[in-house]
Every structure is written in structure tokens, then in C-alpha cells.
Image (cartoon, rainbow, N blue to C red):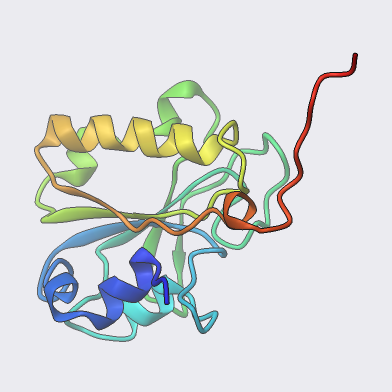
Length: 162
């Protein structure tokens, strides 16, 4: 059985210590789920010992509620009780958090499920956030998951005509 990074973080003691009793920011969206389909942010926010200091959200927002190239505003999620900070605002400077935003954090946890193609914006979001975390000297944890398209036995093959 293959476990995603989110499943390991939420269940294995060695990984749990990365977030328990730590000040973290979680980069996430609606596809940030565990094997049972539960949101990573719900699971972390449900416990006082792992509640993120903030959620950082990419293009389209936390629940995909914003259109293509539409700026995502900062907010506070009333249900989760944490600030939701946009990584997709009105200009290029908004595509990564300011280093000062990460000051005082113990880690940045990245859990964006991509679309199965590496040209989509979430890979760029990870790269920019990783740079800022390095500048701020804050550890960066990537909760990876298998690319289901690449792992599929039904994967299409293509050959050039002729």
C-alpha cells in the first residue's frame, strides 16, 4: 500500500512530530486530502497541538472558488479559525509569501495535489515558496503523492507518425 505524504504526516509518529506543538503554515487547497478524502487542513485544524498558524492558498483559492487568473483575496476562515493568505493576488509579488510572513514559524508544509501534468501553476508555487522559506530559514516539508496518471496501467503511449 502506498501512503501519501498527508497520510504519513497525520498517522506516523516520526512524521507527526513535524507538526505537533509546532508553529506551521500549510500550503493547501481542496485537493489536499488523505486517503479517506478528508481535508489535510481540517485534520490539522481539528487539533490544538497541530493547528496551522495560517493557510497559504494558490491560484483558484482554498476550494477552487476563483476563476482562472482571478486574484484570490486574503481572508479568515470562520470554520477553521485560521487566516487564509493568498498566493495569487494582483501582481507577481503576490505569488509567494513575504519572508516576514514566515518569521517565527517552525515549518512550512506544502500539500498541493497537482493535475498530473507538470506545467500547472502549483509546481511554480512550490518553487517560489521554497525559495522564500530558504531565505527565512524555515524548514519546508513537501507532502508528496503518487501521480495517478503516470502510475496508471492504462497510460497512453504516443509515437510520431511516419
